[in-house]
Image (cartoon, rainbow, N blue to C red; front, side, top):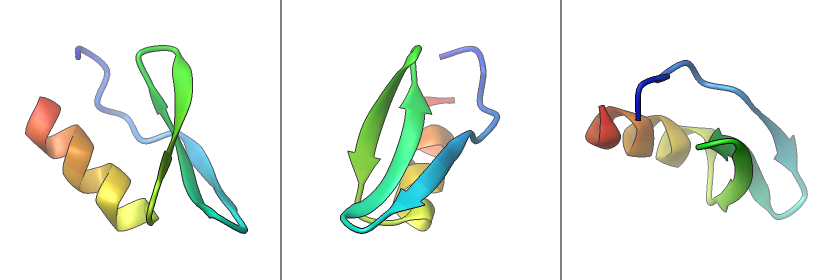
Length: 40
C-alpha cells in the first residue's frame, strides 16, 4: 500500500477506514492505524 495516510470515520459498529480505495470496518481507529503501519 503506497498511501499510509489515515482516512476514515467512526460508526456505531467500529471505525471505517479506507484501504485500497474501499472502506473496511475495524474495531477501532487504533486498530486501523496498526493495520496501516503493518502494511507500510
